[in-house]
Image 1 (cartoon, rainbow, N blue to C red):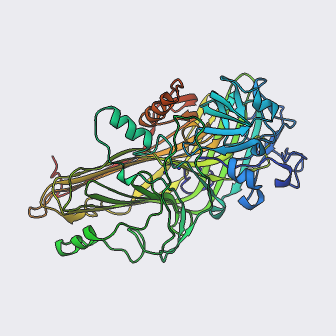
Image 2: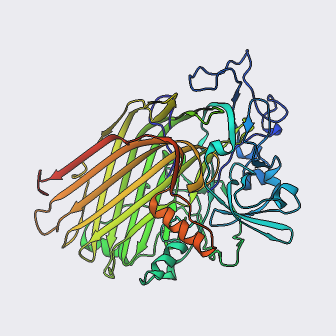
Image 3: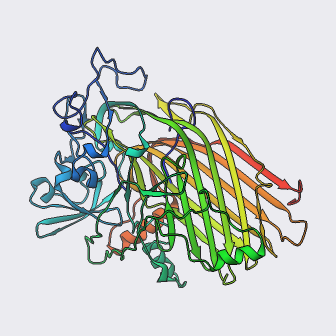
Length: 564
């Protein structure tokens, strides 16, 4: 995901919907339907992946306030224009944002107006294209009075578009990004579906911390939090067995957390007891006991900030891509024979920082192990392309702690500078991945500290993906580029010499299609089974990199070689 210079941010990991444009009021200089076809005075960009002899639809930047209320809530409807050929069997709703009545908190259920003839005629197996978010294969449908309720499954972008050329080359206004949440998304860590799976396997699940409010904030350097523009809705259940959980609450606050000025985690026995007995940090995002929040400007970039408390363990994590003057470049050529060429690049990146503080209280009884998707999409509105494509930043994570002693503290920081672009380009059967260098600015082992009478460790991995396409969360489909980063910290007992080891790895991947971590697909398919829907594949690709490209593989130890 990049284009110009600097680190190209990707789409992630920690959130479900997309924002895009394509209506006439979005582009007063374009055609009546909002699509802007390149003319001789505005030549289409040179790129060998376009369909030759066909016009190129050129997109432009839009702001959320330029969208109607229904477009902001449900996504932008597709339009029919010269230069774009849709598949013959697509149920295309050109007023789709107005035809949608509701979207469920699980992210896969949609309620539509049964008075629309095309909606009333929907059946299993149909490909529905109502909005940038409400798109997919109908895998369940039910008529209830004036409503039609559907569950949508994954598709390829070629299932809706038969032929077309699309181009976008614009600066990114981070303040104009919009976050869409699916608080009860089955693929979220410790979701309702995950808990039910655990219970069905005979294990116990503590539901006392089940809260599902998800909110995004812009964080200023002083620690002041301002809510990010987020699509809000009340949960609705399309099927009897499909019950949404009660929402928790989100609060704006100005109390600094780890990574914010003014916060310091005590590193000595007299101090960490104060943290252990203090109330938890302010609730900003909750997914069954896990708090997450994303910052997009004043914290210096795009990233995940997470707080988790479970079993007597508390963990704070920041993982941020630092951006300066970000710029998005996107090219897409879909050929009538099914061939797809694509270029995705997000420029302006200057570095990556990951930091965490972990605390085992005197009540330690279990370590944390959470794997899943942050149940939100942070989106960049794209306008004027008739097909409502959206740039989505998505994240999945894996968090594991291994505290062997109570009242222990573990702290680590990894700070990297970046040079080069993060981007993917696939044209005519060939990959082109620009070189990217990540340089560690500190020794990982020397940045590990804490107090303990035993051996403690923490593993955190995050998959951050930038996808430009249609759909939402795990079922979003289109060209994407992603970074997979992992950091580990291990520290022996403080009463000994104390071996400290830190590792950091980063890889780049890319493809065209959709993909979910297997653990996410397992949870989604468990949920689908509850409503008697057949399971869906965890991934579907038109093409993807055969092997991820290694970018960083570091291991630091103090003393050198102490871990063997």
